[in-house]
Length: 93
Image (tube, rainbow, N blue to C red; front, top):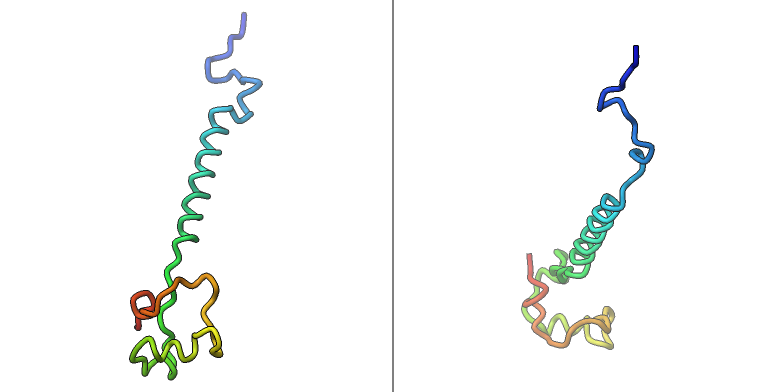
């Protein structure tokens, strides 16, 4: 009597390895995840005005610039866009 293996009992010697198609799909998914992470990181919103005693009495940009001017105690960074309309980007809570 001859024993014949069924179609589901055969093992493909290369079946345990990851195929080129699977690697390409995995690489594409990794690239998309990296791109989405980069978008989330690069589109950060400016911070809101802090909820402390100094900023609770906020009336206008003149008060901001008294501390955040280049010579002030907490100057704006070099990357800060030009403009003195603080509330347009840094809204109050």
